[in-house]
Structure formats: C-alpha cells, structure tokens
Image 1: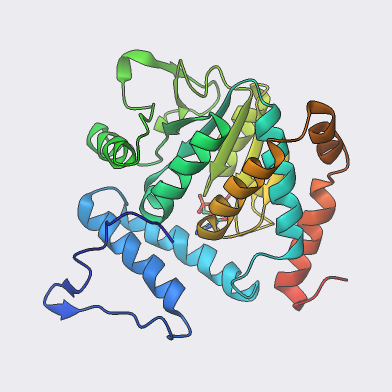
Image 2: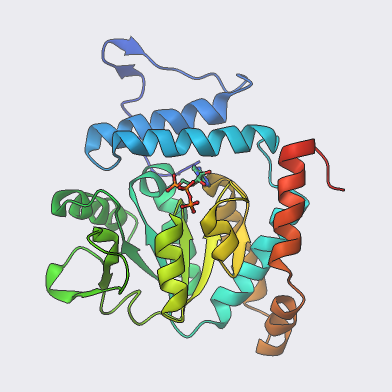
Length: 265
Ligand code: ATP
C-alpha cells in the first residue's frame, strides 16, 4: 500500500466514518478501493478506472491475493531487464498513481528510470494532476508537456498515442501497468521491450509483453524495487542469464492455472 500521507482525511468521507480495521479479512482490498475513491475525488482516476480495477480484483481474489511463486520469477526477470535497459521508462495512469505513486517513485529512483503519464481518457488537467502527485515523491513525470509530444503510429484518434520525445519515444524498455492491448502492441512494433504488470494472464497486454508480471501492482511494484536493489550487484552477464532462462508463455500458463484451478499442473 502506498506510503505517504494521502489518506489523512480518510476518517471522514461524506459524513461517513471510514475506518478499516487491520484485522478485517478484506482490509487491503478495501483500502485499495478507498484510494481509488480518493483518486476520483482528486480528479486523477476516472469512473471507468474503478471498473478496470474491479476486473483486476476478481483475478486477484482467485490468485489468493498473494504473489505466486511464478510472479516472483516474473518480477526477477523484469528487474534484470529494466536494469539492463539503456533507457527504461515507467508509464503511469490514474489508477496506478492512486494506488501506488510512492512505490513507483521509489522504483524509478532505484532503476534510474523516467516516469511518464499516459492516459486513455486524457485531459491536460488530469495529466498535470498526476504529474503533481509524483512531484510529492520527488519525481518529475513526463507526458504533460504538449510541446514535446510525438505520436505513436497506429493508435488512431486515441490520446494514448502521445509519447514524450524524452521518454517513451526514446525508451528501449517500457514498464506498463493496467495497460490495454493496442498500446502494448504498438510499442512492441516500435521496437520497445514491454514489461507488463497485469492481473489477467489472458489479456492481450499479458500475451504481447516480453515479460508479464501477473500480480497486483500494489504488491508487485515494491517487490520489483527490492529485486532491482538486490540485482544491481550482479554484472551484465548474470542479468542476461536470468533473462535468457525466462519463459514468459510458460509462466503465463501457470499463472492462468492458479486462477482456473487453484493449482499449477
Ligand atoms: P487487453 O486490452 O490487454 O486485453 P483489457 O481490455 O482487459 O486488456 P483494461 O480494462 O484496459 O484491459 O485494463 C485493465 C487490466 O488491468 C485488466 O487486465 C485487469 O485485470 C488489470 N488490473 C486491474 N487492476 C489491477 C491491479 N491493481 N494490478 C494489476 N493489474 C490490474
């Protein structure tokens, strides 16, 4: 869960006291919903973001709301790839900002990566609000300056095509979260290596990415930061071995088996 002090006003919302006891069996899940609600109130999250989160929650429930052994391998490979990248970029949207901006900021610092705002329902105001949120954690997020935009080919009229000329446009590896398949495919076609965090191992993004982490962003992001910190001590050869031994399809299949059968077979 996000550190920082964004939830100081959580005790009273609309005259209703919201206090989630730590002992509540769904405490984490309820806290996440509450963070998204705050994100909506701040203008960072869109109502449809809630629906996307709901889809993720259902998969997370079936995964047992824990990081599976497969996800740990996916996280290790992702950290190795991001450390080897010439220019890694982490793209963020409203949900990921509301759920774990501070964790993403820590990860970006650990990797020396840039953070870039990319929105499905983009307004300049929303982009700037997200940028402001990251500033609280010492990150100057890209993707909010229209003068620096280049356009990704093949994304039609969607504003997701906007790429910061100093960010994703130049990147060789891009970490995406709660992403949609079209943009993942487009970035891949542009020669970028895509690392995705997505609770649905069957989504187009999960299948198109080079490395997919099937886990909740709220758990995966801090674990990715820890893995990057640990693997920083390895040399390039050691990192390449991790990536060469990594089999995305195989691990995606196993992640799907956890969801479908509650076991890996
Ligand atoms: P695709 O276009 O890749 O097939 P989609 O249309 O299902 O994907 P969206 O609705 O655009 O995707 O994005 C939401 C995706 O993010 C879903 O796959 C959902 O499971 C996942 N998701 C939602 N919340 C989280 C979360 N907290 N952590 C990780 N993944 C999440």
